[in-house]
Image (cartoon, rainbow, N blue to C red; front, side, top):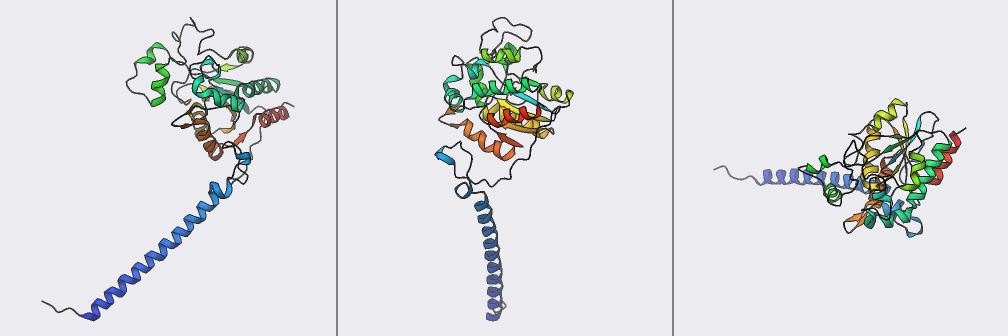
Length: 285
C-alpha cells in the first residue's frame, strides 16, 4: 500500500478550497444579480399602490410605458361575454362576480365603450359564450367548467334554436341590446372554454383588416385574459380596458386582481374606460 504523502493532501485541500471559494464567489455574484433584478421589479420598491387599493396603479412602475396609438380603419372594439349570467343581478354567476362588477363600474363602462365605438364608426365584435345540450357530455373539465355546467351558465336549447333565449342567462344584458342588435355589430360564433381559439373572432377581425383591438367584457382572469393572450400570439395589438371587466371573488382568490397583474405585464396597453373612450373620439375625426 502506497504511503500517504502529506504534501499531496495539502495540495488537494488547497485545490478544494480554491474551487469552493470560486463557487462561493459565483453564488455571490448570481445572488447579487438576483437581488438587483428583484429590487428592480419589487412590488415593495416600485409598485406601491395609491390610496391603499390593491387595484390601483403602482406609484412607480418598473415596466415601460405603452406606446399604443389607435389608427382609424385598423381598430375594433371586442366585447367578450356581455351576457346576463355575468352582468345581471339575476345571473347565475352574480353571487361571485357582483361585488367586482359594482366596484369597477363594469356595466356602465362597457356601455360607454359601445357608445364611443358606434360614434367613431369603429367596428364592434362580440365573442359570446354558449353551451348547447351536446356540450354536456364532456368527459373531463377544468374546475370552473364543472361549475358552469352545473349551474347551467350560458345554456341554450340548441345551436339552431332561440327557444327560451330571450331574457335567459345566455342573452345579452338588456341595456346592451341597442348596440349589439343594430345590424352592424358582428356576433362571432361561441367560444366554449375561455379563449377564441375555437370560434371565429380572429377571422372576423382579419377580414376587416383589423390589427388593433380594444378588449373588454367578462371575466377578467378567464375569458378576457385568454382572449388577450391568443390575440397577442396571432399578431394583434391589444389594449385592455381595466374597468370594463371584473372577476370572481372566492376563498381561492380574487380573479380581477390576478388578471390585473398579467394585463400590466403582457398587454400592449391597459386603459381606463375614460382613456379608451377619449382615444376613440380622437380617431373619429
